[in-house]
Length: 502
Ligand SMILES: *[C@@H]1O[C@H](CO)[C@@H](O)[C@H](O)[C@H]1NC(C)=O
Ligand SMILES: [Zn+2]
Image (cartoon, rainbow, N blue to C red; front, side, top):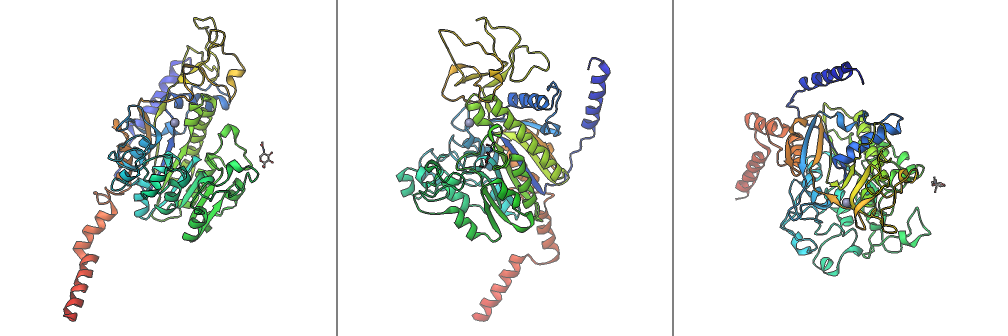
């Protein structure tokens, strides 16, 4: 590194790659959208360093799989009503292509948060839904409950993101005909692969949880007495349901067209707290999903979410960064299982967090370590800090000194400037990285809604199914030249029948 030729040679390699970039007209057969919930740019940079340090290097020079993607855009994350957004409003933007109000799912901004009646007529369809209509296989993988805001925006239309089960809904919303998100998971779009947490919203009250049968707090909570898992299984031929890693490992990809795996009653555990013998990792879930979905000759759409967000909210940066590293491992694994020749892979975040790292730390400093100098209060501080959150602390009239090894522990709450029960999202733009067919559409500074549109265009999904270069467009024009359009043929037949009848 101390020789200029190290940097000059590296830069030349990067230049050659940049010069060789081509804007292909090829369309995407498959789309994988990786979404790091809460993965702002500062989180990505810190995760890169953590990844390097986990493998024993100083860290800064390490390379995330996602950052090898050749194309990139920034996305503006505000929602119609909020400068700093939540995951429901942003999910609706990047999945449905329409900005909306905070805490609402799969609805336009004409819908009002918490008002069931404002749902009807304001539904907007996600790219997952449109991909399924186009004959592709579709799937959801998440480390949260599968009814949570981000995956929920892929299939639900709900005036509140917290209507997980009927028991979570107000009486008037039920009376006015709104359905809970778990119900919509099973009865809206035909989803081929559903992997994550969220068992308790699927089964009737008092139903014991298979993993924690002794703990009544983990029981099913539905009041309508419905077993949505059983309903899903009986409605889909070749469907399988599993609830632990052993079950997932035993699934033979060739034998199932539909797979639902719910591995916890609510959200799945953080990677740092995961029991690797009972719960699959996001990498294992992503791999299983791809192996099942890619059997569809029309291609697939897969949404993969990792909940970096919850670690940040609790001020536990180590948990958040480990999730970001895991999401990157899932990106790498997906890259081994697919080809950029036919698969558009996009990596983005819904919003950022008030997470930062600084303090003139030396090269190779532990990303969870201390800044080299004391603060004005003559006390040590960690490089990682939050703008607000539970890490605010005053003891005996002063800020406690940060110290190692405590500051490096997974449960250490990094200090924050302002006391809040939970640390907040932040409002700056998020990165969108892309590789594969039409990845060059991801450029410039865009509204977050552009993500859904660029993906739909790349794969010839509605409303871009008949754009030049799409097979549907070609088939239609071909049809008018050589043989009657099927609708015209049907019309002719009807007229013939009518004439005979008359
Ligand atoms: C993981 O779960 C299994 C089965 O419940 C249990 O026997 C084992 O002790 C757990 N391991 C850890 C590290 O908690
Ligand atoms: Zn959040």
